[in-house]
Image (cartoon, rainbow, N blue to C red; front, side):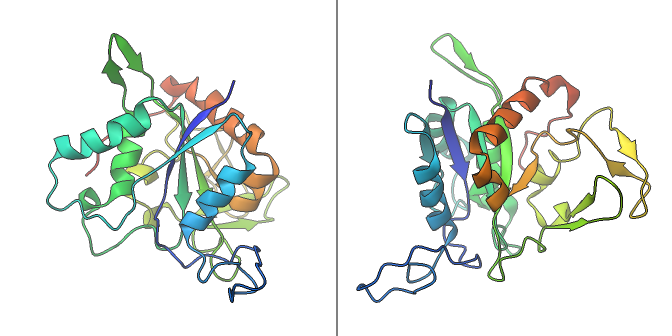
Length: 234
């Protein structure tokens, strides 16, 4: 049975590594196959990699301002898209967040909020979606703008710059109620195990095991009571 997946992403962010889709004869960039690679191209690539019976529902085009919208209008736009999905993927990219625009006027926080809320319709209540964040490589093919891995101990450690994210996304990372911490040379407060309701994984790592990563998100969601979930856009 196919999965129904909702994807939240910054449509026009072009500060990402070119996709290798050369298309000779069309005058396109020989590295990317597109005149300019954006996050939307990564979403299209993702669609082509999913199983034939999986269904991806893409988020809103982010060229539409929310500044003049009421909450009910936003709800009506997102409810149908998210209600029937069971997994939400959030594409982290270098410019996903506009620092000069209130978070409540940007689509991604609302898409995350509605993915985390339960919705009742026709006698049926949808559950909080399983979620996973996919970190896209920047133009230098690096994740370091958001996460950096270190060989500081046997298992290795990764430093996540959650302060660069939308508040609602950051609050649902490292939010396990009973955190399991370990010591290493990098820090004395390293989280271990499934410490985030919305875990983050690199693009290449996600591609290598799509089903495994989706199953991981579902397993975490089955233990949702272990996490302090933030559902409100601020």
